[in-house]
Image (cartoon, helix red, strand yellow):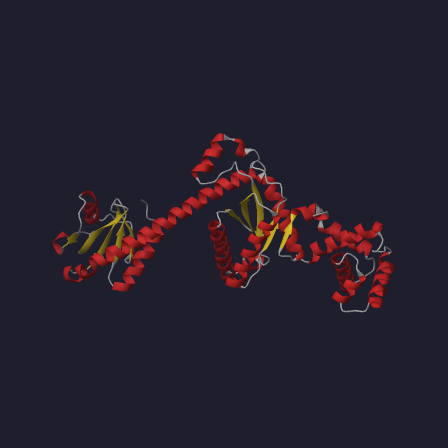
Length: 380
């Protein structure tokens, strides 16, 4: 088993601070990989070598046995899963180090076992991430028998039908600008990952988004999962997370398409500041990202010619309300806290400004594109 140097150093420093003695940790070949005395790191510890090769239960180095690389003290094997993974050494007089030698050894074994377990999980996670990246990025990969077998070895059944959900943190870019913000992002992403693993959902962190592959299910079940995640993030971190869902056409050979659909839905949810959005509900939003910002701005300037940005914002609020309530003047007036006559006047004024009456079917598309472009440009 391999003990990482970073993990080993953390362990010896933690134990050294508790017993106020110099601690060394040697790997399976007797090399000092961590020490409370930095100068000793990298040296070969002959006493540790003897413990490993002769399978000794302990070895105390006396003053007479000291060398440049082996100091007075006790050396004990670290046994994890019935295998010697290294040696822990405590520098000091025999009476002193024997008092807590076995306690230190046991503490170290527990911490090493925990570290090895965490390393194994991280390694397994990285393998799954790489596998999923290949699966998503290369269409047709899942047809390969070799790829299918690799998936089985990782606990991933690529022959099942999946749906995709893409998650975004609305303030992702802002959080990446500071160390504390990045730490918060890591914690939130870790919480999402743990929740997905708890529900046996495939998870891939691909900054700035997180991809979740869910066995074929209904829109309602997708929404339920998204709400659970949103509630978790809100409760633990007082932050928001949004979700985009693919269309309800899960196919075992179309994972890439599912992810692309979910990403487009998530991008729209971001712009609209909505908690979740379905790909099937996208219209012009399907290709809005392929239109340049300058073209969108030119379109808005053409529709609202000679109008200030502030006034345009007021008209856009009116337009958005119109679409939200499907043109119902009664519901619009109630939502905007104004009299119906006042609302009718504002709609008439909008027609005068643009030359297009939003109440006419032939003009609806003009305003729908306008509100879509406006959200894209001013709600980033």
